[in-house]
Length: 134
Image (tube, rainbow, N blue to C red):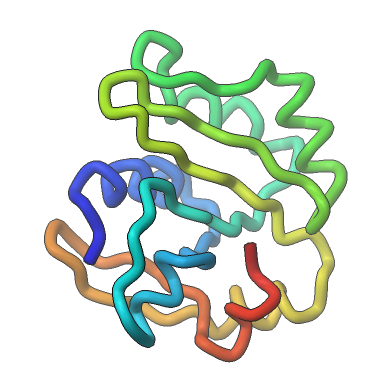
């Protein structure tokens, strides 16, 4: 269901210690039919205090990441914010969406579900919240 490289991108964020969950089409695949996708939508519970940890998780020689000021700005936008990480080697994309204070997204983070995938465990948005998650 999830390519090992996508899992590795997910794990870089999870290893920071940020509460996160997979949403979007990859999240939906855990509950239904497989879909073709080359990215992963990851909802993160992060604020400006996490910018340096996010940057450290994605070294510039391996990944594209927006400048720190852009990441701070997008995190400050809460649930309306977004920024991307691109893996130079594989061209895979990780779309990061701050949870902000959106009640449904906050509920989703509280009720995220662990799912076993080849290579580890990932946290997935509950099916009930996927309609609003990125």
